[in-house]
Length: 425
Image 1 (spheres, rainbow, N blue to C red):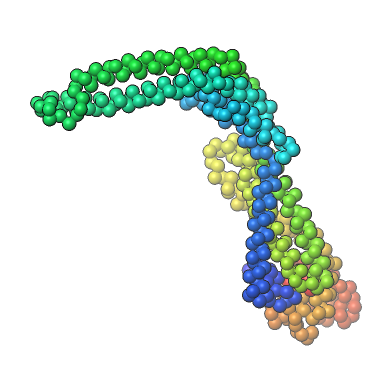
Image 2 (image 1 turned 120 degrees about the horizontal axis):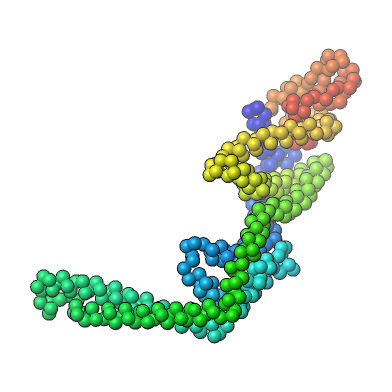
C-alpha cells in the first residue's frame, strides 16, 4: 500500500513538472509556478465573489439582532427608549435605504425580509427633526449629570482627606486640599439636588418621546411575538441552508473550468501536445484544490454537520466533540466506499487503449518511462510487464486484449491489481 501510494505521488509530481517525459528547466518551472499562483488567487477571488451573490442571512434579516437584544433579560432596563434612540442616531432615512439596497434583486439573489423592511420604515418615521431635538436635549442633560457625579466623587475624596487632617489636628492653612470640609459638604448637597432635578427632566423627556405616535407604532411592532417567532424561524432556516447555497454557486463556478481543462488536457495528450497537456494538468489541479477545500468547509458548517449536531444535542446534551468523532470514522468509510464504487466503473477498454499506446512506444505499462522490449520488469519502477496467458500459458503483456503468442482473448485483470499510474502516452 505504501509503495503504491509513493508511486502515485511520484507520478503526480513527475506529470506536474515534465513535458513529454522531459523535466522542465528551473526557469520554466518558476514561470509555471507564478502562473499557477496567479490563477489560484483569481480562482479564490471568483469563489469569494460568487459566494456573496446570494445575500447572507444577516443581510436578509438585518433586524434580527435588535429584536433579540430587545428581549434579552439583561437589556430590559429602558429598552423602549434605547430602540428609539438607535433610530434617532442615524442620518435621515439611512435605515430604509440600506435595507432596500440589500434587497436589490438586480444585483444579487435573495430578498430582504418584509418584516425587517417594515421595521426599518417605522424607525425612519421616528427620525424627524423634532424627535432628534428631544434626543439631543436628553443627551446634554445626561452629560451634565455625569459631570456632576464626577465632581461629587472628586469632592468627596477631598472631603474625606480634610476630615482626616482635622481629626489629626492639622492646621487648615497646611491642608493639601483646596476645599474645606464644610464647603465640600455643601457643594455635594447642591450637586445631588441638581442631579435629581436633571434626572427627573430626562425621565419626562424620555416619556414624551416614547409616547409619540410613531414611537408607539415601532414599539408595538417589535413587541409582536408572532412576527418575532416567524422572523426567528425564517432566519434559522436561511442560516441552515446558506452554506449549501454557497457550495452550489461555487461548484457552478468551478465545474465548467474543470470540464474545459479536462477536455483540453485529454485532447492534448492524444495529440502529444506536451506543453498544452502540462498547462491543462496544472489547471486541473488548481481548479480541483479549491473545490475540495469548499467541500470540506461545507462538511464542517453545512447541512450534514448541522444534522449531526442536532442529533448529538438531543441524545447527549452538550457533548459536541462527539461530532468530530463521527466525522473521523464516517468520512474515511464514505471515501473508501466511493473509491470502490468508481473503481468498478473504470472502463477496461480505456485502460487497454492506454496500454496499447505505451506498448507501441516501448514505454513501461505502469510509469510510462522508456524501456527495452526484452525487459520483463521496468528498471525505473520495478513493474512486471508480463502475465501468464490463460490459454497457452506463455508470458504476454498485461492489460492488453490478446495474447502475443496464441492470440487468445485475455480476461481483464482486476482493476485493483496495479493499475497504471503514469502519463497516458
